[in-house]
Length: 160
Image 1: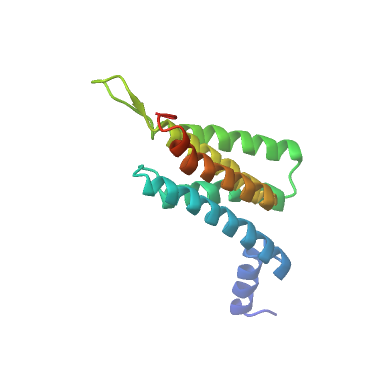
Image 2: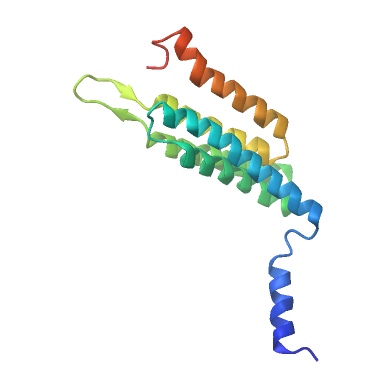
């Protein structure tokens, strides 16, 4: 007969059974870390540009998106179910991005569209990392950095 300590220990092991092997632990850790790192790069560029959504916001969006697609994979959900999760992420981040957009009543200008689009792209990069498409996520982040950093130097009035 088990003692109550053994019973509690067994229950705790069962609660953490979603990462049953070291390989699975490393796989999940790698995907989440890549999402966080790429989100940080995009957030750093936005922060250095003086925008409201910076490093932490972009990291949280990327890791959140990655986690939201990782969980259905761990649960061995169908591709259709994962597709619905992705649709929900895209919609939810759209609402988050809407909060970064401001319209000035005095001069009728709109600000924050690039930051909102960047958050949306950051979620997509997080989704790619979470799905195990790390190379696609890295390539997309590099392209985003080029767009955010170099394009304004080539076309100074673009995106305003």
